[in-house]
Length: 434
Ligand code: AMP
Ligand code: ZN
Image (cartoon, rainbow, N blue to C red; front, top):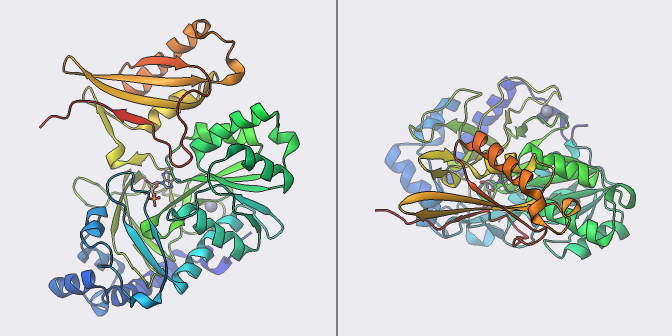
């Protein structure tokens, strides 16, 4: 059940020793990049000044802005000729950042993804349909190379083209899929219109869902509709992409691969570490990258570390499901909320379909929130008026989840715009003050 038992179950002491040795190597390697060369000179940092893991705290944090300021090559730590590939972040917030990989980096990354897939039960005789965008986005190629390393047969389907996706699954007996959760929910509608029952007509058993925040309710919907076990996959292009943290068969938290990354969780306001169990911003240091090592990268992703060891025997610490990014937080009528809270309330209501929007306006100088939710096709009789009780229930559930009362509008199935990539849910039309 382990891809690499020695590493996955290494005791904490052994893991920390390994991390320290790799951190020193990473400091040495990063020192070849223009950015770190200057920084380390200014701060007096060198491999031999890193005596313990706590010394990482002498190294300043970096953010997306730091990467942008030194775009494109300021963090490159090898001659350009040694780079074999670039990727970029999805760029949902401002200019995308780019990451460069050597051949060894790509191989290490594929090994991590293979480890994740193997952990959930994927084996060489599986047929893996990768429904993530291929290209600059890391979800496609990242999983592709991991699955090939594991030895599974890959169908590089890419994103979108729902009918073809389903035909591929059916004709080639796909057993494992990788899909963005919001798109996974849309595809359920396509199954229905094509008259396909995944439980009877397909051979699927495992789904990997990731690349965007999603709730336990969404996972359950996907598991039920497809007849699979769905595992949460977390990663970010700055740390390669997928393969940073992944759910094991216990489906309770995501193991962060600490032989390849140092994980810190900080309070985003004070930048001080928070204890296990307390939510904070995830900060990662890459430990095995040579092309573009990054130290203490602030992800803006919010999660907490589970204090207890995992029953599966892996010693690498688990993070919780991501609640959202610090910059996704909405302040409505002075109340802080995350889009995922709205998803949680909506997806728990069986009459609600897969797609929804959150629209914010300013009316008479006040915040005004509208939630538009699609009705599930099976529940739709052609008349929205019969669904008044559902609408009221949504308002009540949202009020108790958010402490703000939104206006709720129900819309017919399959009418809100869909995204093949990460879902766009929030439309903030409010007046910007100051
Ligand atoms: P990218 O720019 O494409 O590298 O996207 C990375 C970001 O996607 C992360 O920093 C997270 O905000 C988000 N993300 C990736 N995987 C997950 C996941 N499983 N759950 C929640 N958010 C995720
Ligand atoms: Zn586990």
